[in-house]
Length: 76
Image (cartoon, rainbow, N blue to C red; front, side):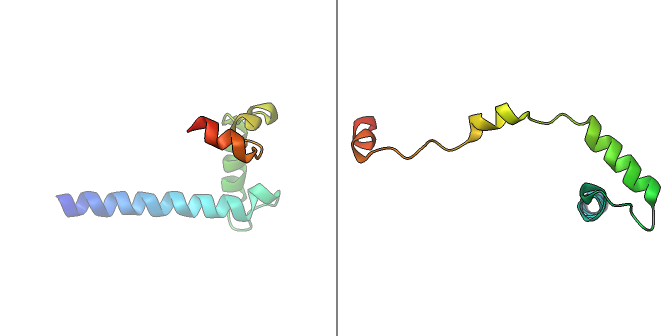
């Protein structure tokens, strides 16, 4: 039973990885998928519906500007 669970989980992981690779190869660049255009359209709609960080929110995660050597000693 445990082996079956591992096999099923690994197959699901491979499917998700394949979908991500297919999305990056075609819809993310604005091209149609040659074999399954309906799949590319569905992935593009799903990505458009997903929440993303706004540009001003990204500044929160930016690295701090370089500090002078004296500031580092004061923090310790």
